[in-house]
Image (cartoon, helix red, strand yellow):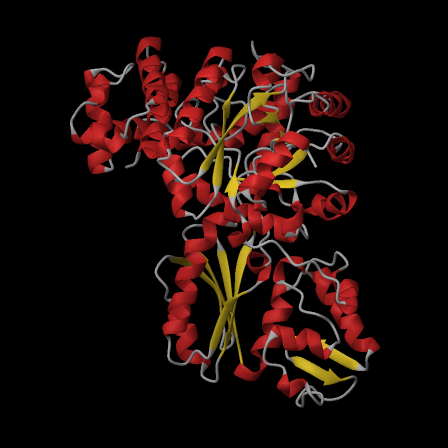
Length: 580
């Protein structure tokens, strides 16, 4: 296991011990051990290699042995036995926001709750509202969490499906009877979450392809098995549909099963207005047989050809949502969407100074491999005490460290000094202005008091935006996809305030956030908002998240001119100083 995975296990052990009612000292030891690993600046691999884990402040000999075992074996019998001793239903209850180990223990001991179903019944009966420490508001939040959990279980993060999709495409392309193959649907449109997966294959010999598909490793259930369409459900819960069409109809099927319903309706309407009908089988003269393609349709070999047939410029898959792309494609004025290769650096990143798991030097090394010109660090500020946030003196030390690093010449990258500063309940920032003024930039974010009313939250964030030290607004709605709903906030007012104060709003590229939502960007960019695609990285691997952010930027119709971190180092320096 790597350090991030070990930290997760230690935190889980602490929660499981809370459920079992173990003594607070033992629980605290695992929590402290997790925090200690988050804080270390040294190379963790080297620490384990030299058997010096017990030298880390906050980690004793017994815990060091468990950490070493996890690192070397990828498994820990103690953890497995502990988890097995707790009802799976109780562990499932931990997935409800606001329910930690102590509260789950209380619910179990007081009301006998041992599953989501019994938790729901206790909420509806009013039993939980009467418990000490809960009440009616807690009951409402739990019920809302249960509803969301059910909805979330039916969807999957786009990011988490990449390897799975690549394996299926790779396998299809190895089959001799496959002429063409592609994923389609919401995955190809790069939606942030997906309900199922659609694959389209062009072939004149579908039978061996279907046999291969339904017998794939990991298939849990075959829900349909036909000669040209089959549906299966995998053990990971995802439903996958495979459609096979003749090779000369592949492009029509790919377009049809990629576009949203709204996009397809609009394109079919355009086809009708030109005297044609369009379907997954091809382009036909209106009201005539679908056995024969319309004149000129046989030359359609790519989706670009298909759009050209209807006198449209190419519409990228990400834009096929029915947001006006057809009318703009007719005029030839669709945006030239941002590309991953145009990103020159990122700004919202965390190191071991707060809750990151890798050092500044390690993060710079990864940024170099990504080919970037610069990287900025925005560790947490002091109000985020749970994330080991930095106080004023620590911020000054960090600035000195970054200056020394830049002056050393050990890297061609420029390192920018920043902070992710907490927006307090009243809209003020948790660090003094005299400190913030010494940083290159400030990312202001909400990390607490999510239950404020929409008016209160909106006023709170706008007040922070109006602070002259604030450069960027971080994860503006606080959502965690498939985990937590956004807090109530009027994003139109937030966007207007950001534009007026020349504050950037980020696309937080963490696959669980992807916030600000892509549906808001098209109009915001037209109104003059500047975007920054930030991975919110807490490790070197997390820096790769920027690619998910580029997906969302593309869905939001964003071009590189509206992306702060598509600028050169010199332009970034000027922008930070002048905000123009």
